[in-house]
Length: 269
Image (tube, rainbow, N blue to C red):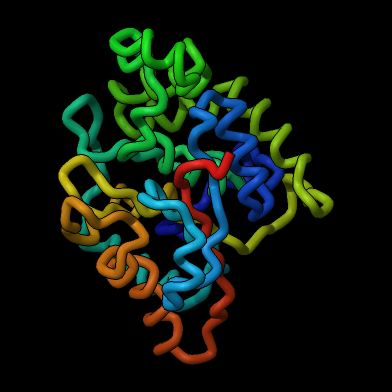
């Protein structure tokens, strides 16, 4: 493995890869303790308003799933070479970022980025529960003391490597992931399989910035400012994030433009 490789070492624990399936992802985050008022949904187009209209808004997090290409790796290495290793922690963080140290867990890390930031984060957490217990009892927004609740509470004070180690050792996270990975529409691959698909997550921070969250990078990436009423599926957010990625791949020529998008938003139920 190259010195600048962000991939997990061969000896690291590996998970069965998650199927790229909104129902599987929704099942996983609900099992961990996210409110049932939120769910993941397919995004079938980012350029056709009539198809985007089927997606509930606001969109709280956007997952981009794609094969790791030579073009992407060159861009990653070049961009990361100018950035310090992220060392943030605590309540002052604009976003909560998780370094990936578990093999084949980029889907899980992407989901955790989605539910740990922005408005989705308000659907979990002990403090929110204690302050608004009478509301949540009526509306069923939270699961008291859920695994997500505890994970986020424990993760926030930790430096990135300690935070990654906490995820690595979490039995609740591993169990929930294993159950979800076995519940897809297709036969699950082996944990030892070499899977080329990767997940990154785009979230909007409390300061109205679009952040690219990827556990293979040196830290979270600020992609630019959004207006207060713009979500992660707004035209500006798409231009700063997904469309920028697709443009690089297309201009490189010969790139594999297979990709899919899944958004975290209000549930249809």
